[in-house]
Image (cartoon, rainbow, N blue to C red; front, side, top):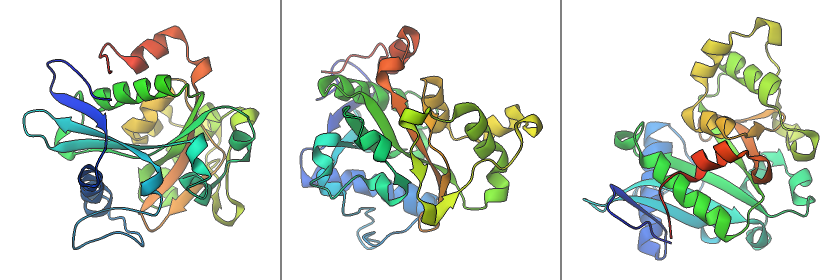
Length: 256
């Protein structure tokens, strides 16, 4: 699956170990060096951010055509491959029972990042176009995955977390819940006391993008001290996306 035509970027699934290492190198740059994360399988000598789930995921890579550099990545785990992986990555943070028992085709998204030099431009647009084609190819019905706020100081995140809880909480049939052992309530500020504008400014751009497309969040947050993040679980029912949102999501860029 490679993006065609004259464009700044190309999008494909990693096909070799060398391509996977390039994805893991970018993840190291963003999640370890930039955001201060860590993990059992992080290889500081080789500058690779990796974990035990990597062999089971499809890894979408975004490359700049001129240089060939990998500047964006996404990793994707389908419902039909999760058992071989020992479950979904998100199950370390959330109870996914409502999704796993739904009988629908679900796709876990994770480790999404774009090189700092390419944020705010069209790079994420290309990644999402590739993702839209993947969703179509595999008839995916529900997308989900953890997305992160930088930092673990809950008081500093009280406004945006409360905004997500009050305005974007998933319906019961999609409402995953942070595991009891690590449950962090997001209902920290009464809705009447929310400063919506200020709160939304604190919401990371990736989370905002999912919300614009009709996404919602599970109940509770997970404080990930190893990655220096506070995570929420995003869920999107693709069948409920309206025509305008679907058009935005798939974009005008064709992937084949």
